[in-house]
Amino acid sequence: MRFLFYTHSLVSDWNHGNAHFLRGVMRELTRRHHEALALEPEDSWSRCNLLRDQGAQAVEKFRTAFPQLQSQIYGEQFDHETAIANADVVIVHEWTEPALVERIGRARRNGAGFTLLFHDTHHRAVSAKGDIAGLTLEDYDGVLAFGETLRQRYLQAGWGRSVFTWHEAADEALFCPMPEVAKTGDLIWIGNWGDDERSSEIAEFLVRPACDLALKTTVRGVRYPRQALDALQDAGIAYGGWIANAEVPLAFAGRRVTMHIPRRPYVENLPGIPTIRVFEALACGIPLICAPWDDAEALFRPGRDYLVAENGQEMTRLLRDVLADNALSAALIASGLETIRGRHTCRHRVDELFAILGQCGTARVVSQLPAKEAAE
Image 1 (cartoon, helix red, strand yellow):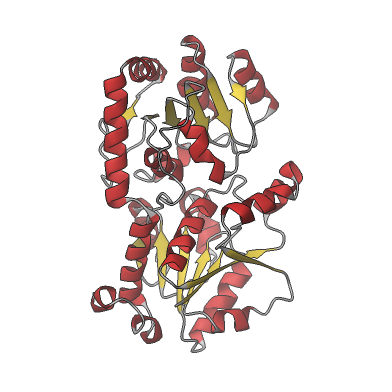
Image 2 (cartoon, helix red, strand yellow):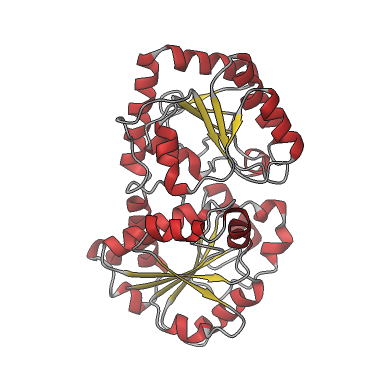
């Protein structure tokens, strides 16, 4: 089948976590001998910032790391109708311009045979409800929401015809343990600052514990204001700026522990939705300690796959325990890997996508599905 993804960017992962997941999904589709193409706007905020921050070599890094993935940039004159007419499945991400969301839906309403899905991987359904409410989704065959609480928001608001939970996951072709890599540090946190949505949490769960324990700590990410950079420096934490997602497994491999600090809108309004870094960290076999979040869908086994610190003092204690106890560290690694490999890879998500297409797909698409999914 021919899959077409309208995305904010495939090429750039600069403050754009959905690119991680989309790359893994597209790679899995091509591995199964399907065609997959991403379309991204020429004014993509993420790609423009990446080029400004890192230069053109960052785009070349992407092409070197993901030679099998195809992306095409579109502008005002792009012929969207021809592009989607040649696709079997079109998946439109929620950062797509509203007028284009409606335009693609109109083509579906006018009899096009492709299956059309809308994909939401953000918290705007609760933090900027007007943005999502203003989208024209009635012509879409289904909505893919990256968590059950988000799916419920869509159902309650009446957005979309059918709504399915489709979590993010780890690209197991990229995210895997590297036991041969020597440890060069204690703690690494990979996360963007972003709109003050977790500024106090970063101070409580990362900066103070790392300073109190005198850990050799590295932070990678973007959009850190001057006061945040000063706080990291005062705590003796090395700040490395942007890191290409393809380089994250090696960064994890060189450290002994990492952490998950969720953004406040997810904790307060969309419980049960972790960032993609949880999946990726566990897939890399690094012990993970989380600031509080509610695994409402039982995606993982808290206390076994990762530890949860209810406050900064507990984070300090748990960091000390993991770094001092090799057996505890090994148990967390083994359990986390078991859960990821059994439930949360892009291979699993593509299986789920085919099952969803079996429920809401057009006749043209259902006729091409593997027998199991077509029957469901």
